[in-house]
Length: 201
Image (cartoon, rainbow, N blue to C red; front, side, top):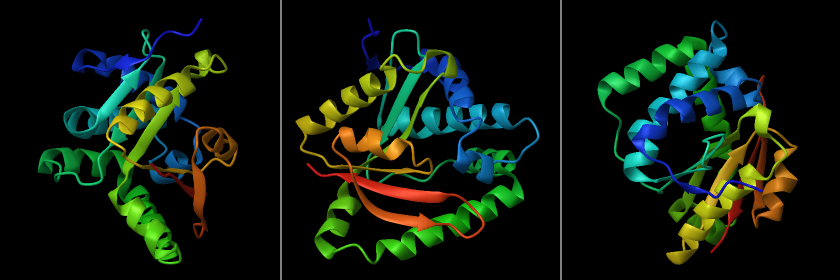
């Protein structure tokens, strides 16, 4: 039986970081945008920083009881991060990682202009499924679906749409089963392919 999903708290941060670090250690996007030395540890700290300073105070974070699955949802508008947090993020990504992320973000933004105006308007006002990960030792038990479903059910109460990006093609049919549809596919020069998806309210 799957553990029920619940809202995360600050007490969960160490396990959230550990789970997401392991979950994203071989993910195409993080492999391309985060420096290689101590890669998994860097990813874990980056995830902790974003959850601690962005997702928990401004969005919603959902976990299973053992925090082996995590899903973080962010609102469409966010305040700027404190300068010291931004500096730490930059150090963890490294100069190459930051440049690659900027190039990828620009490529995705350029392709977004091809989306029909009404869809682009929905995307601009939608919440974002910013991260979802399941510890490799606990995959295949439905935990990822459980934490995502909890977050989506919360958004449905306010009639909010939701967007996401994935750089793993295997994730696309999974998200389609949850009601998302592909809006753009971008082959980032020298980097991963990025699928942008929308679940309209």
